[in-house]
Image (cartoon, rainbow, N blue to C red):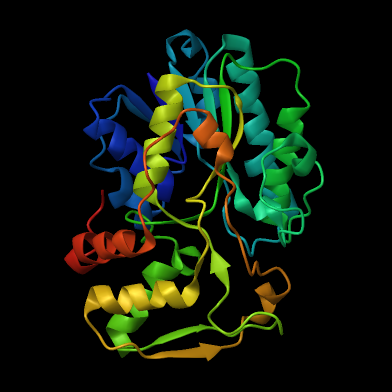
Length: 322
């Protein structure tokens, strides 16, 4: 059986559905399944069992020898979260327990890190251990992921295979419950559909023009493909970036949504909210050499193609869950 934590969330529920479509049925989904807003993400997934995250370590006793892999995607992902104790519990200590379980029973582990660990990008976007040691995240969420990455790199006892994935800006179906933390593409689709116009964040840096803030946007379909590859092929263990390797501007993104909706472009700018202004990343671009060296050769979906599919095959179809 394959364990997926965070299975009621965006990426976790997508990965569960993707594995179902690839013929995997012996899944155990782990999360807090009580929020009604997340019900549609997991209710149709084929799985052996759903386990509340608070009872997982009790449930797994006597069953670990049957686990083929753990895909650990559960975390508190709100970049505006400032409850350090909560982040430490959910993003660090819980992950430590998963690691120890995988070491003890030699279970392959794939876990979610984040591009938020790169902070302002002053050290670049390489996954070399020397660079990772220097990183200075800009918010408590990023620090919680950085703390676990550093802890992992310090461990001498390791699972038979492990991979930490620094997710860049993931977008796509199943993120409908995320509210403010949903992708800019989702918010653009909603705003343009309602008003016929799009407001982007104004730049608060003299060296960056309005709308030219850039991120590495990756379609969730590609994230699922990489996770499946790592689970099945088990290349060298380590921390990998998971983006496309190409930074694109928010203006490009907005224009892609206007094009997909066949609506004339109408973009204006607003200030970045004060509570995130000091921790806002102006540029991210994944260095993808590590994943390519690990043998992953499939091309990544272009921003334009990803937006077109997401908007017209999912969002315009009533937010169909995948």
